[in-house]
Length: 302
Image (tube, rainbow, N blue to C red; front, side, top):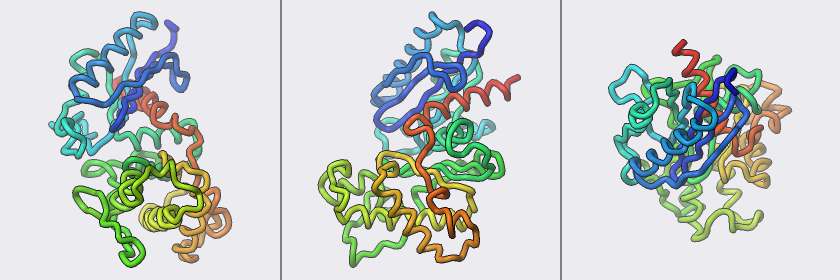
């Protein structure tokens, strides 16, 4: 253990924070912490890492893959902050600053979905690719992008859940749940939208429920748009809704139909089942992505 770097990883979600320590993809210890207030949650995160350091020695770096929106620009005064968010109490929280007050080590910080994309790139279904998308469809919808071998940022970071999709109001009377845009992609297709529309959680709906054809249509619209704009070599679809096995074939078929032969690639024309896939790491993409963020932060600091 003394000869290896030991990293801390945080997957910060809207309902829970998963924290782990490990050597690269090998997890040594892990815990789950409820997402309450920034002070309460982050103090428990710090306590976990401090306790683990008693067993493994000082951590070399921490990777923090967090829900957003957030500021990942290290040159910005707001770097490390969660920006205005519907999550109560978390807007404008300097979460990286809370870690830096306790740990004098490099800290990598990015969105939860960019972290998951990084995990899949290192150890999952994106190995060997240079341009791909990791999309999570769950409580909310978000996407991480690796383009030409680099995590995509820009002004801030991609907000792939907030693109417009065609809302067929004759078939779907639901107005949408997004507090900013109502019937954007997330507003119509997130787990919260499913529950609000049908009155029950998606996990309780039968595979043959009409909810799933509607869901597949909205997701396929988004995936077709991403395919035109980014030209990914693969789209990895995760999250509680996105990972449903009975939904994947519907999404693959509808996406291929919408593209309608315009993208002349065998991956779409002949191998759509290899183009739109579930994560290779299952629900571990995010926490392992945090490990990869920590490794990157250490490398940048050397």
